[in-house]
Amino acid sequence: MTLTQQILSRHYRNKPLVAGEMIMADVDLALGNDITSPVAINAFKAAGGDKVFDPDKIAVVLDHFVPNKDIESARQCACCRAFAAEQSIKNFFDVGQMGIEHALLPEKGLALPEMLIVGADSHTCTYGALGCFSTGVGSTDLAYVFKTGKLWFRVPEAIKVTLKGKLRPIVSGKDVILDIIGRIGVSGARYASLEFMGDVSSLTMDDRFTVCNMAIEAGAKNGIFPVDDITLEYVKVRSDKKFDKTKAADLSDAVYAKEITVDLDALTPTVARPHLPENTVTLDEIASERIKVDQVVIGSCTNGRLSDLESAYRVLKGNKVAKGVRVIIIPATQDVYVRALRAGYIEAFIEAGAVVSTPTCGPCLGGYMGILSDNETAIATTNRNFIGRMGAKTSSIYLASPYTAARAALLGYIG
Amino acid sequence: MKTGKVFKYGDHIDTDAIIAARYLNVSDFGALSTHCMEDIDESFASNVRHGDYIVAGENFGCGSSREHAPAVIKACGVTAVIAKSFARIFYRNAINIGLPIVECKDAADAIRAGDEVYVDLAHGKVTDATTGETFTFPPYPKEIQKIIDRGGLLND
Image 1: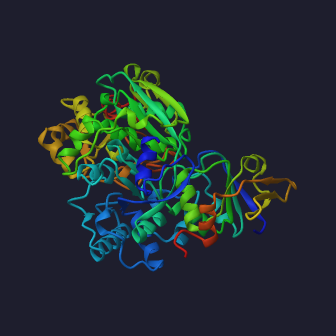
Image 2: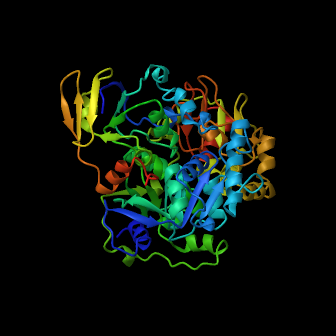
Image 3: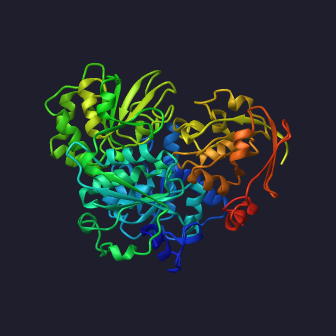
């Protein structure tokens, strides 16, 4: 079985599984946010739900429109807050503790290797970076898990992605995943798991989070990395639990529907043009067009971690953002924020002419904190560049790494 | 299912197009349905009538996990969505809330905007009443059929 199939099997009475099978598996952690939880809470109550199956296996993070952007958002948060209190959900993260969910849960040691995690948020696939099975589901799914602790899954086929070589310093996990999506398309991994193998030690944990985060942008059910020394190093300061490294022998009978290779040595900074993440070009190719940007967003569950801010800092420190460009930098969690503060990144950003926001999903999904006007253009380290995603339906989003976005902040154009 | 008029869209219709996140500060699907398809088809919400159908290309519903997407389509009165393929979270959300979805490449290719169509879910058949053409689609896996038969995941 593949890495994904093995984890699903362990959550389904250790029954050997094959792709395409339908199973009702045990869930270790179920996540909701301020947009998806209210719908789940309503569905749970409408279905006669009283007490959740296990409050310690539920996490609720208020992050999308939080700090509350308006009265309606405030009401949705109040609904989540009341539910967390009534159900004694201790992993409830409100303003002051909250961060963007997919940066926060690994940081808090709530997402760990070998787990089966579902979240009513499509980027829940991020945690596969830690060697767990983790996937996005809907609010009715979440309500069903609230009630039963279980959920239905179709056992996915796998696409094996072999990484070869080592990334150059200006190239990051974002470029790896944009390159893959550009090659296989936004539905290239539909229903399948993306299983990363080969020279995975070339990627840091932050790179792996970014890669798995955008597995959904290729249509994948999940992305997953094997557990290695880098994983164990990350996990050991966050959890008392002990985990084994993945051994090649564990995968001797794995069947892959498709295999692709990524030449890390040859990879260069990559950009996705509007309005699909598959519209990729290299930065070298697009630079000659000198595409003017009105706004730069550095943050999100994809690229709001400390190393992302560090790469933006390296470009921005001592420089000034181009006239007419609005640069918005959003540390993904309180911990990232305070570390960036201590490292001097925040001061450098402000001196460069950028603004720094409290953690929030904010502009990524067109919520608030940086909405685009008619015909405006943004370059963003976020994950989707669909029509209207960050504001007016005539606006445009180019997706890129923090390095590439920070360069555009100084130049005033993509280059 | 009764005959209804077709609204036709292309490939990769994402959940932001179906219902933009800027409206998701509320969870009332009836109220949200007035914004359904707004960014790609401003007139959809005012023109769609109870019993109409959506026909689309590949990967319908890609992007966000927001269940609001199939829920607002259902709240608009759409009988079923017929597409070449569905993104996986949209697929499970639609099944879970009882919005019929039909994966049928031939139907999605042939049916034109404005045609009158109807779907026979039990026999896996789509009929274009305007052209007289019929198309077949395979049955759902039995576990999924059970959820459909119950009218949704949370219905016992």
